Structure formats: structure tokens, C-alpha cells
Image 1 (cartoon, rainbow, N blue to C red):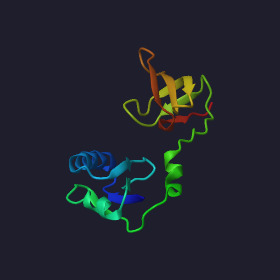
Image 2 (tube, helix red, strand yellow):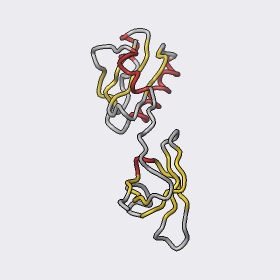
Image 3 (tube, rainbow, N blue to C red):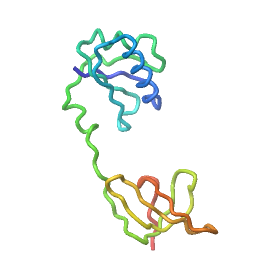
Length: 144
């Protein structure tokens, strides 16, 4: 059965690590922990019974509680599947970097990797052109 824990938003990975260590130490029958970037503030655990699922979260920081209703695998299948992003980007397009250390820089697209949702760009307004590989969601296409 699947159980959802409410956790502090942004702390899901930390809580998963803490729970993993606690589960190992207690030899608890929790089979899996799921952290999804699409599910902020929640962590999903697969456990044999509700009592074990509740027992493992006692005194764990950033855990606010557990949802009363258990979940089915069909409820989370869309969280487990990766969908490639819609790409309307071509080689030599001009883009602006919207996040990261190069935020605000203009760049030219060199290579696309739709499987990894990454793009390699070459920064334009710098003394030495630097190829940088970044995520697709951190750029915006500039009009021609």
C-alpha cells in the first residue's frame, strides 16, 4: 500500500534521506520512498501496513504528518513517467538564459538533446564564446 507524508516544501529529498537511514536502522518493512519534483510538499512511501508507515515518521524533522487515505499505484503513475518537453527550438536560434549563473545572458543554440531536456548554447556577449549545457526550462527564445 502507498502512503503520502506531508513534509516541508523543498525538504523532500532531505526527509527521504533521513527516513531511509531510519528505515535501515529499524529494519522497518518500508519497501520504497518516492520523491517527485512534481509533488512539492509530499513524499510517498510503500509499506506493508499503516501502523509501520506511521511509526517510521515519529520524531523525523520536516515531517508534518501522514494523509489518512492510502493511495493506489494508478494515482501516481503520471508522477513516475517522464514526458519529453515540447521543443520549438532550432539550431542557431537566439535565446536568453533565465536562470543560473548566466541569467540574463544572450546565447545561440548549438545542440539540442530532447531526451535529457537539455540544450547546449554558446554565450554571445562574452569575450570568449563559451559552450554551456543547460536545461530547456531555463531559457526563453528571443524573437528574430
